[in-house]
Amino acid sequence: MLNNLIGTLHVPWVAMIGGIVMGGGVGLSVHGKYRVATEKSLFAMPETAIGLFPDVGGGYFLPRLSGKLGVYLALTGYRLKSRDVLHAGVATHFVDSTKVQELEKDLLKLSAAGDIEPLLNNYQKKSSVDSDKPFSLQPVLDKINKTFQSSTVEGIVENLRQEGSDWSKSQLEILTKMSPTSLKLSLRQLSEGATMSLQQVLCMEYRLTQRTMLDHDFFEGVRAVIIDKDQKPAWKPARLEDVTNEKIDSYFARLPPQQELKL
Image 1 (cartoon, rainbow, N blue to C red):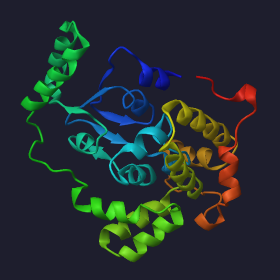
Image 2: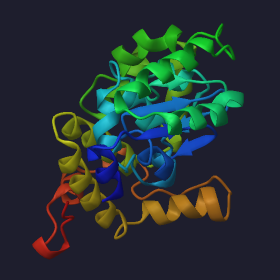
Image 3: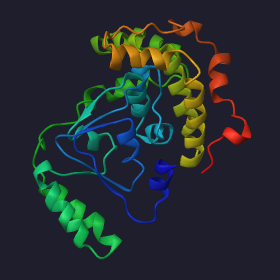
Image 4: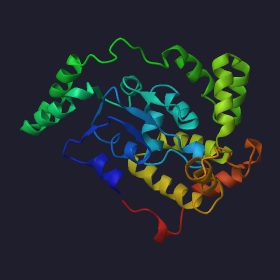
């Protein structure tokens, strides 16, 4: 409900996304009109590593990034740092972290919403930190668009195998560590979310979270990554081919009317 409010708020929402921005922090920022990154920003959607999926409206904003970048970020949990957050389209502006407090004061002095963007643009023009660093994913964007374009996770895996570069091999290693169920859920989530409104996506994701709470992988992922920290989750099913279409369909099925999210 809060993410929906941010996404539909008539008052301009300016999010300062310095520091670690993952999961809930993403939902509090990406649905607003203005998102300001700094050199200290670290953005990621690492949910497939804990048996979840990129919730908080990830099914809305990720498929709207350029090419297959959103799919790549969702499945691999790749971390965007500093100006990468801007280059990827997650942030709308970049400001040196030392200027954030000054920017906040100047924003509070404004009397008209139309003055926000020119002010942010001006601060961005004056920012110098990491200005000489290109987008870290730029050298592999073509590979991402080529290999992550399949409608199935198995297809993506096969594309990576056929591509055969060291980069592709490293992506395969990453994907093999993720929950197979989460990978399939996430890919379908983004596929369906690409043509949905934010409200429709949030309702869909609410259904997915309720079904996740009734299954195995999320609890196991949290145990392995956050509680015991052994980094050895025992996924069930453990193989992509054992995650059936029927299982995935069951996650997306509508809840009883009284349990559906109402926005």
